[in-house]
Amino acid sequence: MAATSSSRKQREVPQLSILVVDDDPDVCEYLHDFLASEGYSVTVLNDPTRTLEQMREEEFHVVVLDLMMPKLSGIDLLGQIRENDDDIAIIILTGYPSLETATSSIEHDVSAYLRKPFSLDEFREVIARIAKKKGLILRREDELHATIGRQIRDLRKARGLTLKQMSRRTKLSVSLLSQIERAESSASVSSLFKVATALDVRLTELFGTF
Image (tube, rainbow, N blue to C red; front, side, top):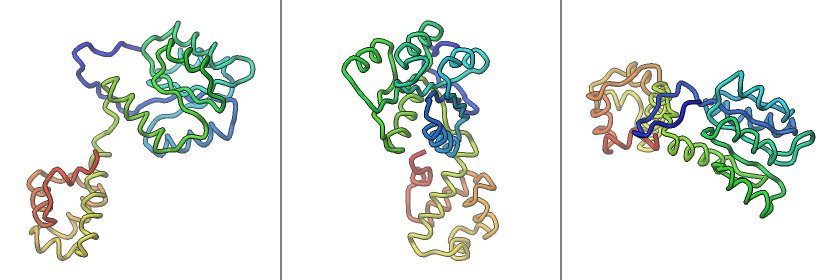
């Protein structure tokens, strides 16, 4: 994997690619479903001995690694990964945290050390932090449209406004407003300004937490 640019310019990433290594099939399925729903490309492995082979076949931005696994311990695998790639982000998962494994994780420059069970919000924040540190752009254009549409719909409903009422306020068609809310059409800056004015909010509020 190419090293992070020293200029700190963000790299366009069509889809963040994550490798999950855990011998527990239920954990793999749980993380796969969650991460896929977040829009990431996810590969799961139950056999830790296949990790380096998988990393040679595909390019990953993040490895999620369980520490307690048969055949090969997570700490040993962590060392092997770092010998082959000193840039990839690594998230450690463990149900049995200890000073020894925490110290080893720090020595191998892991991005996060999470104790099971962890919350999805915690995991989501870790991914966002990693992306920011690595200079990756997680959000694609279609995700931006979805965020704007969802924010407009929520603000409109919170004010008890119908699409027809919004149409009268903005001079935009009901059809266009509906398409914007459903992320089926990108809105011009002019249209977004009219929507923000009608909702009595700043234009930037339409972008939510994007």
